Structures are given as C-alpha cells and as structure tokens.
Length: 237
Ligand code: MF3
Ligand code: CO
Image (cartoon, protein in one colour):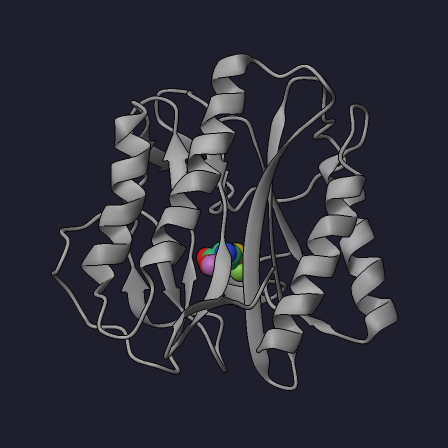
C-alpha cells in the first residue's frame, strides 16, 4: 500500500505543477494518465461506478468528483481540488490536495485551504491503536468550526485496502470517544471536505459533480493512513 501511495503522491505532485491559468482540467487528466501509462500502473477511479476519468478536478464551489473537461479553463484566483487513486499489485492508494491557480487568491480562500489541510493533519495526529473514529471526526470538526467554516457531511472518508472503499466509513465530524476503535494494521483514507459557507451540497446533473448549495468555495485534502503501534503512518506523503 505504501507503493500505491507513492505513485499517488508522485502523480499528484506532477499534476500540481501543471496547474496554471489557461490550463484546462482535461489537460490535468491527460498529465496524470500519461504518467500512469509510463509507470504501468492502473488508475483507481476510472470505471469505478462508471466514473470516466483517472482524476477528479473540483474547481471553486465544486466540492468533490468534478469531471475533467476541455471546457473548464482554470483562471487566476481559482482553486482546484485534485483527487487521485492508483492500484499497485492489487492494493489501493487514494489522496487529494487543493491548490490555488496562479499567484493571487482571495485571502479568505487561502485561509480555507490552510484550515482544511490543518484539519487533516489534526485528524492524522489522533490516529493510534485504541483511538476511535469519533476522535478522528471530532479532530477535523474542531479545527474547521473554530475557524468559522463548515464540514461536509454527505461525503465521508473510508477504509482502503484491496478495494478503494472498504469499511469503515470515516466521517469528518463526530463525538470524541465514540465509534469504532482503530487497531494496528487498519488503513483509512481521511478526507475532510470543507465549505467556506454552509455544509449543504448538491450533486449536479452529470451525476458526479458535488457543489456547495450556497455557491461558497470548498476545499478537500486526503491521505491514506495506516494505523501502527506507534501512531499514524501516512502512506500517500
Ligand atoms: N477520493 C474519492 C473517494 O474516496 C475519489 C472517488 S472518485 C470516483 O470517494 F470517481 F472514483 F468515485
Ligand atoms: Co477517498
């Protein structure tokens, strides 16, 4: 799973380097697809419940599962979430980052990115044998809500292993001490989705793209994380 995670990280960093004003989200898809082909590695998302691409590209108020398109031209001040998964020898890796397009993003949007990434770090911090899923969700929620943003509740993180989505579900909200206990050897994908405005999301007519109901900006960061005797090991860093 570490090897799958390393491929995911390499491709995400390559795609990040191609994010610039004037690039289309399909350009990003092609970059990811070409690198996967060179590595001889299989994409995790393409064909999953009919999803058409290897990458999800969710721009501004798109929360998750945006489909790369030649019509979606990135512009200065946008943010784009890049979500990517790969399969190596039957084991899955899954991660996401949200990155600014160009040099000048709105300070409030920059804060959204920082807080969302910090909420993922806080969740990873609590991962150890005996910690609960409620501890993980609470860690995300505390960071996000203290900053006046809201946690998306309609999508959650997940166990990951020989399938992309395995039990348990890993919500980004919760009550400390509640829920299933983590044990050594479990691997979970923790993936806070955070809205600048309200938490409600709507799925567009393409059946995939989730957007904020109030049109506010949304950010998404994800790591696949193994539970070890001494704490978390991030497989996608
Ligand atoms: N990281 C996302 C998830 O865990 C990616 C899935 S996109 C899909 O749900 F297209 F494959 F569904
Ligand atoms: Co995931």
